[in-house]
Length: 157
Length: 394
Image 1 (tube, rainbow over the protein chains, first blue to last red):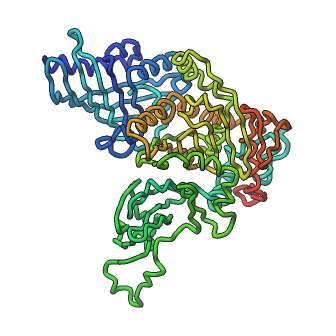
Image 2: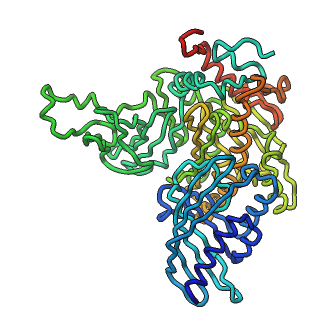
Image 3: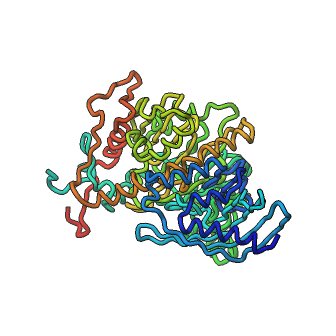
C-alpha cells in the first residue's frame, strides 16, 4: 500500500463533492459507513452515544441524504451551495493491507445566494479495502466551528 | 386597504391578521425586549444540565447574559446575571463549567457558587472598605422550576411560573413523566437564521406546511415505510397565555421521534417531540436557535443513542427537516415581508374553533390556531407601546 494510493481517496472524495457528483461520491463508501460531524465545543471528546451530533449518518441515511439533495425538493439546497475543498497536511496514521487511518486538514469555501462562508477543520478518514478498492468506512468532520450557530449545513462537508 | 401607519405596537395584530411590522420594525424589537423578554418567564435550562454542585451553564435571557449555577454547598439552583459587579465583564465565558468559585477575568473579583462576592485583590485601596455583601452577582428577580425545567423572570411581580405555564403544564408533565426522568446533555445543536424570532415559534405550531416544505423528507419516510403517513391528522390547540400545541395521533411518531406533540411555550421555548428548542432573538431580523434532545435517564445507552440518531435525521443545521424550514419559513418570509401589502393572513380555521372544558381552543391540526393564540398574548404584552419615530414624533 502506498501513501499516494490512500491520500488519493481523500482527494477524490473532495473532488466529487466539489463537482456535486453525489452518486459517484456514494460509490466511494463502504456498506458499513459513518459520516459524522460532532456538535459542541470539543469534537475530540464528543461521545456520539451521549452527545448530539450535527450529523451522524449510516449508509442508509447517506443514501437518503443524497437522494434528498438530488430530489429538487431540498429547499435549503435549492439553489445548491457551490463548494470547494482544500485538503492539506494529510497524514497516514496507520495502514495495513485491509484498513487505513488518515487525518487531514481542510478548508471549505461555500457560496450560495451571494453569501460566502468558510469552514475549516480536521477530517479523520477510515478506509477499508474491498475487492482491491479502497472505500471510506468512516469520516469524522471536526469543524473548528462545531459549537457555532450555523446558517445552513445541508450540503455535504 | 393598508390604512394609515400603525401608531402603537398592538395595532399590528388584528383578528386573523398580522402586520409585517412585527417582523421588520426595529422599534417593535426594542419594545419586545422591554415588555416581553424583561418580564416574562423565560426558559433557562434543565436541572440535569447542572446536576453536580458547582455546575454552571451560561445562556441569555432576551439580550442579557445569565448563568444558571448550582450552589456547591447548598445544591440550590440560581440564575444570576453573568456580569461582574465591578466593571461589568462577563464572569463565566464558557458554555459550561464547574467550580466552587466564579472569578471575573478582568480584576479577579471572586464570587462563590451562590453569587456572593468573597474576595477582591488589593482591597486596601478601598479606603472606606468594600461592602462585599452588597456586591454579589445579581440574581434574576425570580427563578422557579417546573418538573425540572428551570425558568427565570426579570420581573419581581407577576404571575407565578405555574400560572404562566397554565394549560401547557400537562405537556411538560408528559415529557417529564418517564421512568428515571429526562436528562439533557451538555452538547446542543445550534443554528441561526436571518429572520425574526417569532417566525420560528409560528413554524413549530404550523402543520399546514409539513407536506409542502418537507416533501423530500415525507418521500423518504414513505419510501422507507411503504406508507404515506397521516401528516395532517390531529389537533391544533390554543392553550392560552400564548402557548399553543399540535397534537398528533400517536402512530405518526416517526416524524417526531416518538412523542406526539409540538408545543410552544410563550414567548420563546418550544418542544418538538422530545427536543427542547430555545429561540434567542439577536436583532429584529437575526435569531439564534439552540436545540437539545432529551435523553432518558433510566434507559440504556443504546436506547439513548437511537434517540439521538432519530433526532439528528430531522433536526439541526444538517438535518433533513430544519434547514428547509430555515430556508423557506424563516429566511424567505423575512425577505418577502420587507415589501408588499403589510397585512398577512392567519385565518385558517378562524371561527371554527371548539372551546374545550379546560378553556383551550381546539381546531384542525392545519389551522393557524396556535399562531393566533401566540399573537393574542403578544398583543396584550405590547398594548400601548408607541411606535415613535426617531425624531421623537408619533
